[in-house]
Length: 286
Image (cartoon, rainbow, N blue to C red):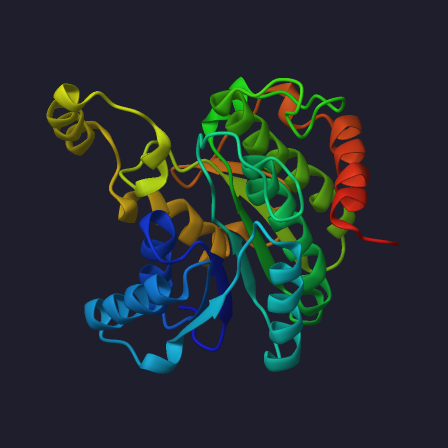
């Protein structure tokens, strides 16, 4: 049970995020739904309350646009001011294979939202997490990290943009972030672990073009082969709540079991360099 615990879930108004919220409130945890679209988030919160029948005080909606560093800072200021504790931060939100666009701060959208936005969010909430220890950070990555590489000469994809490669790069960055953050958190009482949810039926693939004639077949196959959002959320909920992972640090899980990663996802030298560059990109001065 998670009674008395406060959890932040980014991208909580649909798909895996929404399913994660429902599962945590059923365990009596209080969830702050951190979402870009306030109206859609409030609608999702209402759905969740009706579906679960829990006390409405267990679901809070707050606006957070990970494509805006100003929004991330403003969100964190509010949380630090209003919340006496934070037990779990679930970095779930993601942009998938969108056309080349830039965030408000000029970053390639997938790298900016999936990695940099969450990087700054976690950094700004770390002191609160440490004061609430034992506490946890959960990072949602993807097995598609295998198709990405960290090219320090073109992190912003300005020389070359391939939307699938850029998504893979952002998800590889999530794993390297987990690796370096775990090293920095040793002995702090805060743990960080990542997960790959598998292929899930969500609206994440809205930018993927499927020919009109193929859509009925694709939809039929997706119901048979893809996980439901509830199944996709299981590992996020496990890492947020299970005593089995007390003290487990810097691992990646799939289907609630440890996953072996390719060496490029655990390269400490690359992880450390990416961390340093990410600090400069988001304007962290240490």
